[in-house]
Image (cartoon, rainbow, N blue to C red; front, side, top):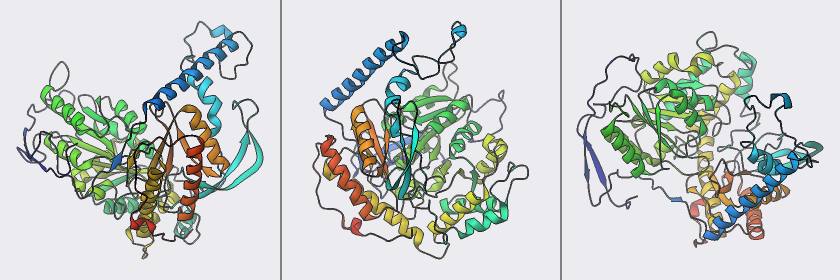
Length: 560
């Protein structure tokens, strides 16, 4: 990345949309496409890199590498458990140990295998021994604190039984409740209760049949106004918003350039589309520009015809890394090479930006420069579902071509009203300043928590503004010990390991919320400091100042 003081200027040879194909069209497979791809001239000052001047926000991200001995010990740990896994498989094969997993019936041994034995090796011998750290049953509201049902296993986690005891008031550091709208305050939820009495809880139809309610249209107008675009469309499931809409936008003869750390919903949507997929390195503009240049110059394989469309797919905040997309630079490259941009703001909408409008507001870019804006209501809004927003022509096209729009049931009325009341609170349309208080509280909690973890010596990933805070644990044994010890101290955390992360980068992922008080965060930090010393988790070799930004010392009181 070039020094921030350098400025770059990209000058297109023609208008911003000249020379690129429409993002959505009904062109038949036999129709010819224009062969001309608009050329660009890139003028640069003081350096060899081609980029764009960054906005007011500076990307302050940390991806510190662990010492070499940590990587060696991590590989050694996986090697040991793998060897014991093969030993236990041998004991099962000779009948000395019982196999609890599904197996092929003896009379079907010559059939095509239904269960791939090697593919189940990791689940059978590694995950099964530690799966008590996942899928814990919650029996309360997933707010800043929650209640867990205690369970034990008598057969090394093959099965569980509930003890009847409840772990009360554990601090919730794993839910995506960024702004604290997952709440049960009767005063705040009055409108949701009213809509439930009026409409019920289910629609029992698609919106194209008889499931289109007035509150659905009200929500779509509100979303478009909140984001600052012409139109929007909502869906009942966030995952399907990506996986079912991407195939409607691109297909055979199109090229998708996808960040290597994109969410599974984006990856599935890209695969279902039938388009050619190429993966660029995470947040690496050199890698992206190289692929764009090659795509424009070489065209499609074998025929070398121009790609029908080139779509860049990125996320606002990456949920496993806590990193923020380098949006201004991607927009500059997108304009330069006449490509389209698909931005997934599942974790960033509501959570970043002075008024919670996501990474476009964080970087101060024009929303019109993003062709497809996607987001979900499951995080900052305490609800469910997702949206696609952009130009009116785009949304009108998706209404008739999206599988999710045509075949899925309409969004539940109480869920719709919950989104509306949360969004109005953020925008200040409810007549209060509660929304902006929560946004500021989340930002302060995020910076405070990250700064304290750095001082303690933990290696954490991501952007200073990201409420997703991964702490690197690395070794499989320490991941298990960390999760169990935190629960013993009544703190609920999410731990993630291979294959969801690289094999040497297992981690605990903390999600900050505006509903977390300073006392809660200090309690979590106290126990983290103790565990960091006890389990030897403080791998950072960097030194950080113990003096915090004065802004993080303000603790705004929120209604519970």
